[in-house]
Amino acid sequence: MTERPEGPPRPYLNFVPDYVKDSIGKWVTHKMQEGGIIEHIDSRGKKVYTVKAASTPNGRYSTITMRQITALARKYAGATMRFTQGLNMEFIVGSLEKAKALKQELKELGFPVGGWKEHLWSLTSCAGYFHCALAATDAPSVIQNIANSLSRYFDEEELPAKLTIAGSGCPSSCGGSFLTDISINGIHTEIPVITENVKNCDLQGTAFTCPVGAIQLKTLPDGGKTIEIRESLCIGCGLCVGACGGIIFQTPEKTDGHAISIGGKASASRYGTTLGRIVVPFIPNEPPHYEKTIRVVETIVETWKKDAKKGERIADWVDRIGWEKFFEKSGLPFYPQSMDYLDIRGITTLRDGSGR
Ligand code: SF4
Ligand code: SF4
Image 1: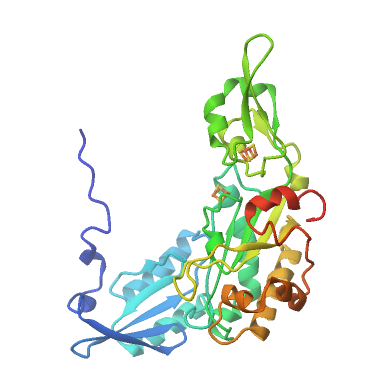
Image 2 (image 1 turned 45 degrees about the vertical axis):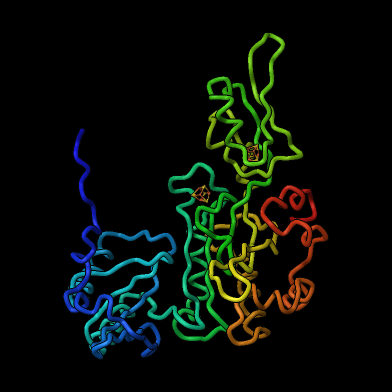
């Protein structure tokens, strides 16, 4: 048996700047110095600084940009850095003077520096079409367009509270989007169809991929086996399409798009973790700039900014004012089914006409 390599970051101390090592386990406090710079203080009064900059929504870079970023890590941060779960860049720097200089260089490279306190913290997405057969929308492009529109909230303008935004190419939500304040979720609005190529698939395995039990095994008159989709149950997630080449969406270019949900958060604050709920059931894909989607997201952010109390994340704000008031204040159209079907499985009902 081949020995498994001991991959990074083990031992993790090899990946921490020397000037941080003797403070490990001794941290006592931290405070914001200025936008995008946090000061950490250990029990002996020693200080180091974390500088945080926005990244691309799906962490995709050219090698040229990666070299520019690593050159900054070498110059200012002991040749180390990390990408956070929200795909932001973080550098730990030994002095405030260096932190400010790094901030300036990151801004000159085009990366906003900030993203803490009452600001936009993160914009993330799954890889979408790049390597996933299930995508119904180009999640990285949608999120990049939202980033272009809202980037001032990362480093300049304040919001009532933390704001996170994420996109997932389909309802599987690998992008973790239902746990963010505003999420974009790709949806297929047509029911997939079974073609004759289904005979080449593992039928039972394909049926098991369906999260709602919409696929039934059937016996043909000649004794052969096939499967059938119960349309009334199908939520159009596309998992069976990914599992079996004999199941297809017929007109995805006309019927794919995305829903917008709000009010998700992973935090344990107030009443705890919540999943986002759908407020806009369907917007067709309109690349490259997705103007309708951007307008809806801007409307949600501006309404929340105007109406929320300081410290209220979107979930907390809606909890206080109620869903009826949310639709009234934002001016977003309300669909009669919405209150009963505000999670992604409600798309089955919403796509039947009135949600579009
Ligand atoms: S959320 Fe959907 S499209 Fe995105 S990676 Fe996951 S399965 Fe693929
Ligand atoms: S699209 Fe999803 S819900 Fe519909 S049959 Fe396929 S796996 Fe089931």
